[in-house]
Image (cartoon, rainbow, N blue to C red; front, side, top):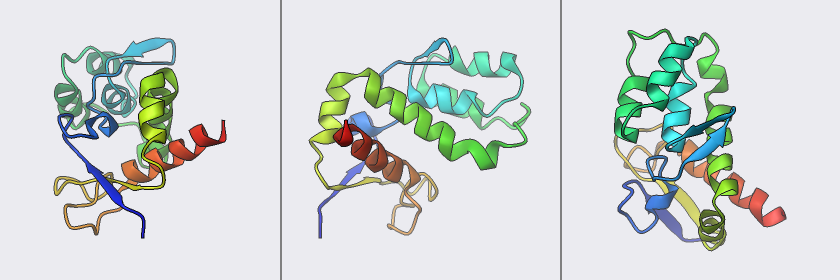
Length: 147
């Protein structure tokens, strides 16, 4: 069985896998401080809400704003959230050569966002979660390898 690499905090050895890692991305004609900022901002219909999230001082603040249900969520969010995440993660690893190299260096290891805070994007802390962020990272790793 291949080894698993767990990540969660940006201070971990593989903290660069986290969407909170300080790597700006350019998407949609704008620069986003982190992939988390982009992902959270795309939840909203209103450009004012989107911009408020983009301007958030920290990824934690961007996440908090993204979870604020006083703002109107796009109707199609549930059906597009995975492709939005994929777009953000792809931008991060194609726009930062050092990150692309680090991701490729993980070889065939299973990448796991290890947290009991999230059983959709992460592993739920007990491995029963969907680990969608880890899956997307492994997908992008394959794309980079194919280049």
